[in-house]
Length: 167
Image 1 (cartoon, one colour):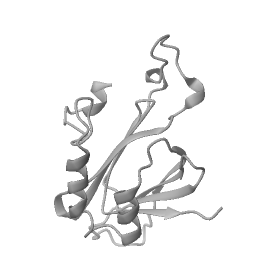
Image 2: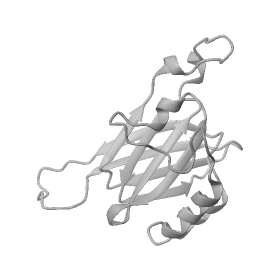
Image 3: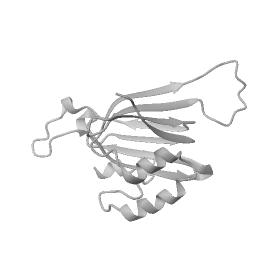
């Protein structure tokens, strides 16, 4: 899975969690920079909880283009949202707004049983393994997510939030 920690342009990804290290203390220290850009509910959820072992049920990419709107805005019209089924069956909606980078790398042939190399077609994206949400330039966010299938999602955005969905 080492190749998953590098993008196509050889940029190193996942600063705190790699095959070689799990810098939980460093990642928690990273959170002190996130409190100024996240709403209180999202910040507290991430500080105390993880989506590890959760499943993405649905992903939507919205390109909200309206020709009548002037093009002098400095915000992206792209929004990504995902419905997540937590390990205890609770549903959440994750929302990334003002998206400037959206990359989803999924190849079912990487999702294999180690011992037999059998492809796990029935697992799809599989469960959420690791993620990092970090502050990048201009108070923007970078969210990197790795799934057990070795799929990887990278989003850079101006706003990220988590919402509990009603049953």
